[in-house]
Image 1: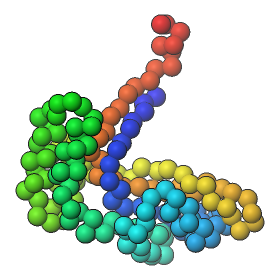
Image 2: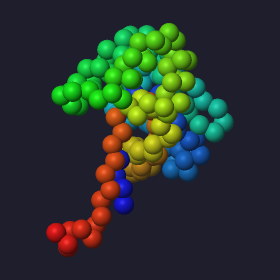
Image 3: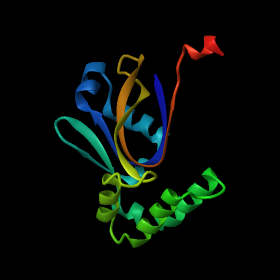
Length: 158
């Protein structure tokens, strides 16, 4: 069994409408619970027949992302490795949000990549008063991705 820790900037949030209908959950309740997880004012909400989708506003990338990540990397370790420095140098060259997303999608940088959907659950009160878990899919630009394999049998060996 493996465990991964991903730290990053949430790019997109998706909640399927079918699951809301199946669970008898009102959309406004889902939004209220989602607001407890993150500030959805930083996202544009759209919906189609299948899902509710929140995409990060492009102006969120207008600030100095390279400086932000440089600070994050310094908190992570005393000395940045060459891969962390490559991220900072590449981000300083970026002009638009589209270029930033393209860089993250390329997965050429270990400390800056776009991750597919990560599913987490939020508790929402249904129309009948009982609560249920609703799956929320997050797509994020990860700047830290660490993995550790945990072998349950090692507990007896050591």
